[in-house]
Amino acid sequence: MSWNDATKWEKDWWGTCQNTYGEETKQLLYAQKMGLKFFHDGKSPFCMDMEGRKVLDVGGGPVSLLLKCTNVVGTVVDPCSYPSWVYARYKVAGITLVKMKAEEMELYRYDLVLMYNVLQHVKEPKKVIENILNAGKEIRIFEWIDAGISDGHLHNLTEENLDRWLGGEGKVQFVDEHTAVGKAYFGIFVGRGQDG
Image 1 (cartoon, one colour):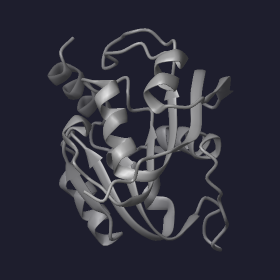
Image 2 (cartoon, one colour; image 1 turned 30 degrees about the vertical axis):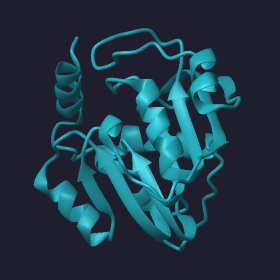
Image 3 (cartoon, one colour; image 1 turned 45 degrees about the horizontal axis):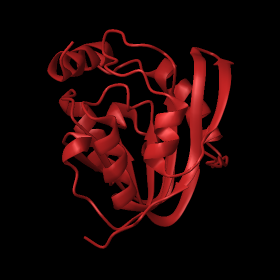
């Protein structure tokens, strides 16, 4: 499967984006594993205070974790096309959504970069890791490993490759919560945080 075919598969998987509850439930697990902390704002127990930090979400799709954040200067980079209401939702939330391949990013000066369940879908995982390391001071990541190749998933990620590309050691754990089932790799890494 080509990257274009895999991206079309991903877009079709999201469909109209009207019922994203299942994926958002998985994202709560990803956030927890990445060490992000929730608080209850009186309406939802799933809020995160970013304390004014500039945060980049790579591959956040139509329901980025940034939509659950307060006090954030947020940017989402994602190559897919979504219904127009998704773009309007980001705009209302004050989050910039950039339609771009992660391999082509030349973004810098972020305090924090988030990436979760993305690298199986990209064209060049190693290049994406290089870009996120350059983009921010702190990198938080969650990826499925040893999952094989399938429709929409171009790469079989491994702990060894991710450790080497990230220049550190992630944690590996089998998870089985809700519909998030598999061998997971996650951690917090030091980025280069270039000024660009």
